[in-house]
Amino acid sequence: MPARTNRRVPVHPNPPAAVPPVAETSTAGSGDRQEAAARVLRQFRLVFNAVKTHFQQVEKVAGIGGAQCWALSLIAAGEGMGVTELARAMDIHQSTASNLVKTLITRGLAEANRAVEDRRTVQLRVTAAGRQVLAAAPVPFTGVLPQALARLDPATLERLEVDLARLITTLAPDEGGARVPLGL
Image (tube, rainbow, N blue to C red; front, side):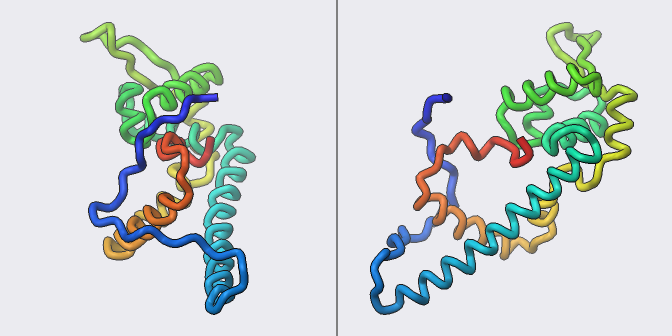
């Protein structure tokens, strides 16, 4: 099990005040609060299940996981990119990108070759088998959540960022999860 870090998830520059915990006992207004919490929970379930359904469809049709498909599509779009560029493009840790690449190479979907001009640099390329997988895979390769977020207006995204930062603070999560794709 990986060690926990003391790093905090970056939050909005003007974080809201801490939210008091939902009371377990019945007090005035707690019913409304519990009903609101239940409605929001159902909304999260809709989001997570949409993501899960998309990744299941990707795996069923393409034979690889959603994060692997996304990585493969980025490699195809940026032939010759390295693992560092892939990690940056996916906003994931470099070791996670490296593990994705190893899996793709092992399955014969991608290859890594040393750059001619700098032998220390590895350039990634998609194989013919990898191109066939991408041709069959459902889109969006990035997943449905990043695509949906990209379609939101800036004001909505800012509100979501502030409100989710507030929720994350109450959860006290393992911050390492911020750089792990949902499709893994």
